[in-house]
Image 1 (cartoon, rainbow, N blue to C red):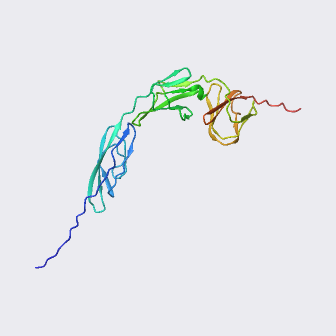
Image 2 (cartoon, rainbow, N blue to C red):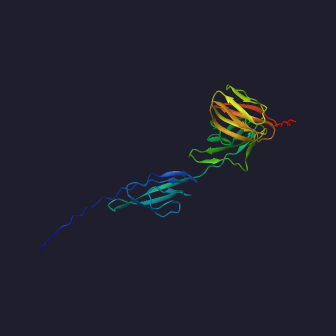
Image 3 (cartoon, rainbow, N blue to C red):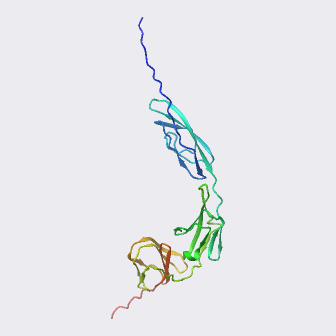
Length: 257
């Protein structure tokens, strides 16, 4: 009688980690990062972007538990799960105009915006639109303690300012506009860099907007604009300078006889 033997190696099951539980705001998504295996299969869920990778995106509408099965190099498999909690979006703030101030109904968590972009440092419950010195639409994005954000109603509660007066505000920068009046090119010369330069119509509508201008002379063409009075607004840090510029009609000289 002959005999033989065989060795059976028993591998431990892999430690599959689907990642830490996470909370997201309604409408947001999150990306998983499963570890511990070389192949992954997630339980079917229509809110997953992919079922056979370790790092799919998930965008649930309600709290959801996702289960992943991971397989290692030896073909051994194990599972883990991750829970995604969905936080509600807060109610939008209500904006009102009270004299020179725009006021949010929510005291904290505000960030004010103008149609040109974010208003840096303006995070209080009110905004002095006279100091901003520009007409146009204003709104707030409110972020609550959970980190969920909502924009104020820009349709039913739109805030549009049109009453900015034509006042020339002086500040420390040495700025020169020439020629003024002009019928074509306006030169803007300044001895320090500027954060923003805007060309505005007399009623405050933005015609041109440039950012991060270097020291020197910048040229703006007014050739395409009708004759009249315009505003040049220049911003450096917390300083604002507004100057008037006159666009004249270009008079054609009669031909010589």
